[in-house]
Length: 469
Ligand code: AMP
Ligand code: ZN
Image (cartoon, rainbow, N blue to C red):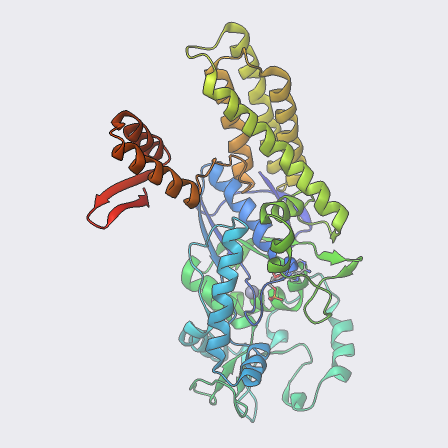
């Protein structure tokens, strides 16, 4: 399996630190609003990478944080006259709902910045002790970028240019910085802001330190993969590397993965520009599986332009797979039992080629666009070779293959024909009537029909109650 590593700007063979295991950290959202579909891109593409690695047999320890202390959260809390934690908890809850609707698996751990302050203070102290950080007059702690020889290795930026440009960009209060590229590890509190005690001043952490600390705590000093949107390469990830490697004396992450931007009208979609759709907005018009399919139809590193036409194309594409599986389900009901014929065995063997095609695409830096083409080819194969004469074993094998490959992409294509509450009530009424008429055969039949759908009936004194198994 090859992964494009931002560090080397090359595709590299993936070799995990520990055989059979993958440790992966994905920078998560700042929770002050509903997530927009740009934020959903890293969630979807890195969830798909995780699912694929799990399919290959790796145990993936996947950590993704919630940034729950930040200027924007504080501003919103002040506007609403509530504690910042009310805002962050509200949007963490909403974010979890969106993730579930997008079929993004929960991370192994979702740490929150405010619950990791102790670890941050510890790492900052280590950096001060090792002379990688210094304390300004007002208690602000800065990372000393010149003390870390490899600063800039991820973003491949010309630091001298940045430094000379940076001096003029310093805002008031930053005169105490020794170098324009030095960045804040800890800052003093301001009126109306949450704060924590520290050896330097009452205050709160800078943004970058949280990821270094959470990654260390939940995954160790050295991890396999660190990921996020490409806007995070500089300064966020560059600063994370400086902090972690200076503090731990170890390489922080072996592979750095960055997703391209989701644009709208070929401009970056962002909250600050105001040109965004929330995931919730899209859910009013589309099943969110369509959004997931849309995201995966492009390579994760390419920019992707959001448009109504592409969403319609995604809807049609997904429907092609869902319809095929639904036809196979229909055929399964009456298909002949027994072993595959020789011809079917040959075809089943041929069909395995689509799994190899899919794996090859995913092994090439998670090329989901080509992987989805493999699913389409398999669907076409199914539509060509499965008919009412086909035996059950073969239909089942083809269906399982489509479902397996879709599932690796996190796409739910085997829609169970769900029985609705209203239908259940209706059948219960009919069963009661049948019993009254002493038609016990019909009453039992209804009970069995419901049981087959996982509905359990309970005769109580207050009448018939039901629950889903
Ligand atoms: P934020 O809440 O802005 O820190 O963003 C959370 C994650 O979403 C980060 O990994 C960002 O890089 C990513 N992200 C934000 N906007 C976009 C976008 N328009 N396209 C792709 N990724 C984005
Ligand atoms: Zn981060």
